[in-house]
Amino acid sequence: MAVVRSMNKMYGVCFHVVRQTAGLKASRLLQHRAFRVSVVQGQQPFDSTLEKPQFPGASAEFVDTLDFIQPNVISGIPVYRVMDRQGNIINPTQDPQLSKETVLNFYQKMTLLNTMDRILYESQRQGRISFYMTNYGEEGTHIGSAAALDPRDLVFGQYREAGVLMYRGFPLDLFMAQCYANADDLGKGRQMPVHYGSKDLNFVTISSPLATQIPQAAGAAYAVKRENMNRAVICYFGEGAASEGDAHAGFNFSATLECPLIFFCRNNGYAISTPTNEQYRGDGIAARGPGYGMLSIRVDGNDVFAVYNATKEARRRAVAENQPFLIEAMTYRIGHHSTSDDSSAYRSVDEVNYWDKQDHPISRLRHYMTARGWWSEDDERSWRKQSRKTVMEAFERAEKRLKPNPELMFTDVYQEMTPGLNKQRESMWRHVKQYKEHYPLDLYVK
Ligand SMILES: Cc1ncc(C[n+]2csc(CCOP(=O)(O)OP(=O)(O)O)c2C)c(N)n1
Image 1 (cartoon, rainbow, N blue to C red):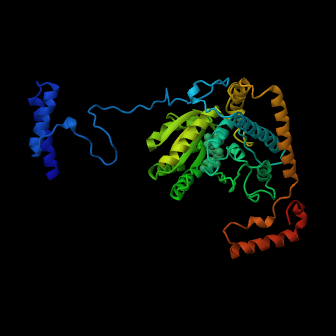
Image 2: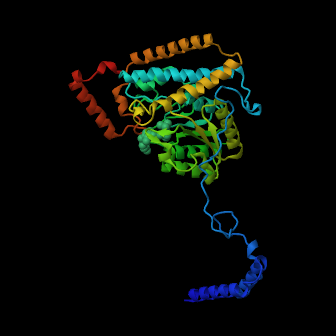
Image 3: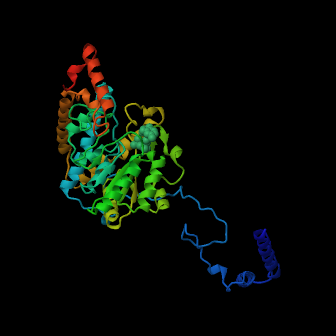
């Protein structure tokens, strides 16, 4: 009751003040009102225009007009680029001035990835491997970012970042071994194709559930910070995965815990058949960064130099200042989502052709190299031939290799095998011995 009475008193006073002062000028009115309120409350006089909000949750001014903040989606965060589609440097101050050797390495890694994709994609079509996902159109995002990192930096990926691993020197034989689930596979043949991982190369093993790597990367970056060894973490994901709750958790944790982490979003326009206008209504993923207190940038993902510059600077600052950065690389998924998808069911061939023929990261870099006299038609022909041969040789070796011993199904579930698992293992062998004619045991390591 006391509260209600004092509220009535307050409103009564306000009303009174307004009536009494109707003829005063605005500034006088404010002064007058401030004075009257302070009299009522028995406090020191104060000017409400100078009052600052004291709420612990935000640092902001008061406003006295009602305005909703408009999302700026028509003219969004600009797309940083260094080269145009013809490979011309637009602003010389942004040219990373990489050596011929470095640029050739970029190009060779991007094209080698492309060649490996073609061969493994075909291999799946022929039923030689069970599944595959190509990286067509996203080669620039992989190589540009990987090149800007320190090899000790920890990588968390989604599944469409094979180029990062390739840049770090993962051998073709191990890519193939994973896809074939043969006895050389570091993952012992347990996961579907393209779920690569390499402890030696600081590349955390990929798993299928989308976005789970995002908060994990935040945790790892926190550990890396405590280790104080000048290392960073990079975490890749698609714009579709960014809709997962785990993305929110990871962004927020890394900002509040001040983690040296680069969030690298590949915005390729689609999440399987879902176009971006069904995925979000804000200005892409980059616009979310500032909402988490993260420094953010949007780059042209088909411009390997733009990706390189942005990642390099984000990495430098993430480590120096212990804070996360968000890079949204705009690109286009030229291939089908996976070998289980036919993308012609939901997008036009013309749309795909535009990106394949008019704005491709590989052709853009090739224009750049050609203009400098670093690459010729002959170089292209012989490199294509040589890289295809290298990939085919690895492919043939992987195909001939035996599968891992079936026993490995039961190991590594826990660090040590439990009695229950051991029983299942023994029962499997009894069964297999009894019905051996029904199992292709000669394809497996004994
Ligand atoms: C938690 C979870 N939900 C759904 C899926 C099925 N799924 C696999 S890939 C994918 C689309 C992801 O799109 P995006 O993150 O944009 O990456 P892109 O494939 O375009 O590279 C979906 C929905 C999954 N693997 N995990």
